[in-house]
Image 1 (cartoon, rainbow, N blue to C red):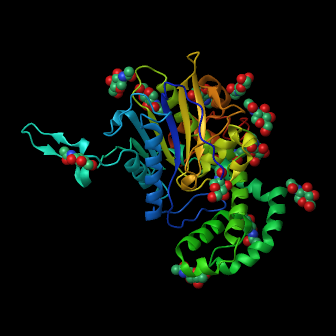
Image 2 (tube, helix red, strand yellow):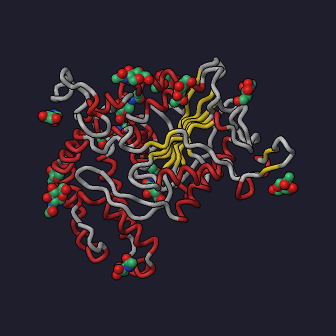
Image 3 (cartoon, helix red, strand yellow):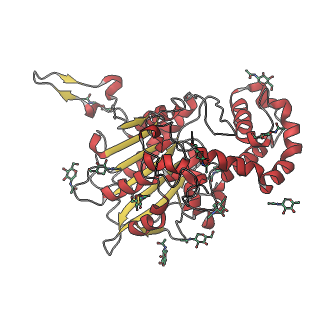
Length: 401
Ligand SMILES: *[C@@H]1O[C@H](CO)[C@@H](O)[C@H](O)[C@H]1NC(C)=O
Ligand SMILES: *[C@@H]1O[C@H](CO)[C@@H](O)[C@H](O)[C@H]1NC(C)=O
Ligand SMILES: *[C@@H]1O[C@H](CO)[C@@H](O)[C@H](O)[C@H]1NC(C)=O
Ligand SMILES: *[C@@H]1O[C@H](CO)[C@@H](O)[C@H](O)[C@H]1NC(C)=O
Ligand SMILES: *[C@@H]1O[C@H](CO)[C@@H](O)[C@H](O)[C@H]1NC(C)=O
Ligand SMILES: *[C@@H]1O[C@H](CO)[C@@H](O)[C@H](O)[C@H]1NC(C)=O
Ligand SMILES: *[C@@H]1O[C@H](CO)[C@@H](O)[C@H](O)[C@H]1NC(C)=O
Ligand SMILES: *[C@@H]1O[C@H](CO)[C@@H](O)[C@H](O)[C@H]1NC(C)=O
Ligand SMILES: *[C@@H]1O[C@H](CO)[C@@H](O)[C@H](O)[C@H]1NC(C)=O
Ligand SMILES: *[C@@H]1O[C@H](CO)[C@@H](O)[C@H](O)[C@H]1NC(C)=O
Ligand SMILES: *[C@@H]1O[C@H](CO)[C@@H](O)[C@H](O)[C@H]1NC(C)=O
Ligand SMILES: *[C@@H]1O[C@H](CO)[C@@H](O)[C@H](O)[C@H]1NC(C)=O
């Protein structure tokens, strides 16, 4: 992927950054085509390495005083826990939570500067040569809060899936893909080659290709790329929508409040948090690039992001003193640098404009999520009173689309 290096920063460096990071490589896992609920997955040594490298990259970018994007007044070697907020989705397997740990190990590696001196003069170094234990401030179990896995148990999202499978675009694409899926059948084991299962098909092929020597040697050339092409097409349809506030965009709509609040907090003089890290899976990237119009100016980013990809929303102050946000992207370990993206056609936009463009689509609370999904029982929804809920019977606007 072509990548261009970054340009937008004021001489003063950055005020802070909100990062969305995709987890690292993992064991195979299955997502139901009718719900996108998934099974457990575990991070692999390859995935740990990818996340560690991502952490080191972020360290060089934001914690190095020589970097043009150094974040002002940030601790460089010994972590100050007040300067970081880390959220990771602990549902659907440990892969995302452990990815966050590996990233943090690269961001703030073990250092003997983290030693402390006790009252009696004894110097104590943390284990493993000064390992730094960064608290994951809220590793969310998925049943506690839907924010990081908002498509799961969301009835309107399931309706959206059913609409996609019935659409003429889907039927056309499945017809186009049919000869390939027939040819691929011997390489699918017990995985269904139904086109609606395209995500699992690609995941199976990619996983076997990565780990199975026989498979690697026998899979015909281009089959991996073709599987990815069709899977990307389907994911793009599943995790976007014709409207910015459609239910297909739900994976980013539940993350946006944290993004607004984190950036807003960073503008305050009392603020301590310089980095807000959200460890997530691939879905919010697709929705984010769509709702910010980034795909209009960079049409090649409509695919699925690689493992250990990252989006940075960098906060700086322009010469008029206004706070500005700029979006950058690194597509996993294949890219060595950030690539500058545009939001709504602009390299950077004011924080006010960013919020104005998107806040109306945000799902700010569990209560709003329950309404937006027509869910009254699961994920903490049973505590709310729905007797006067205009959305429950589908005549509230903007939520079913
Ligand atoms: C730098 O950070 C420290 C600790 O977070 C804080 O006490 C100090 O006021 C900050 N200084 C500036 C100039 O922001
Ligand atoms: C800390 O580690 C560095 C090398 O990483 C070494 O040069 C230095 O002597 C160590 N200091 C102490 C106090 O152990
Ligand atoms: C699907 O294919 C048919 C026949 O090729 C075409 O008429 C129709 O416009 C296509 N629909 C979409 C949504 O691509
Ligand atoms: C393919 O999957 C869809 C949705 O999961 C289902 O409705 C359809 O019946 C399946 N088709 C076949 C041939 O199994
Ligand atoms: C490895 O791939 C070969 C060829 O497709 C297959 O027969 C075999 O079952 C796979 N091994 C495992 C452990 O999945
Ligand atoms: C913003 O700051 C408030 C007040 O300190 C705090 O309660 C809240 O958790 C912060 N939110 C984010 C996303 O940083
Ligand atoms: C967003 O996704 C919708 C639905 O897939 C698509 O029609 C629209 O063109 C996309 N918008 C952008 C800016 O890519
Ligand atoms: C990331 O790179 C892969 C190739 O390694 C490509 O297939 C995919 O479309 C890229 N994703 C984005 C969002 O650019
Ligand atoms: C986003 O892109 C669409 C075209 O896909 C355009 O109609 C719309 O005006 C753009 N929005 C902004 C705020 O630039
Ligand atoms: C993008 O920049 C143009 C020109 O400066 C400005 O008119 C427009 O409001 C900006 N768009 C957003 C969403 O801030
Ligand atoms: C969600 O919060 C944003 C500000 O962060 C606000 O603009 C928006 O109106 C809120 N949405 C709802 C439905 O309350
Ligand atoms: C919402 O769920 C209720 C049952 O809880 C159901 O009766 C209603 O039809 C659903 N609304 C829509 C629009 O699917």
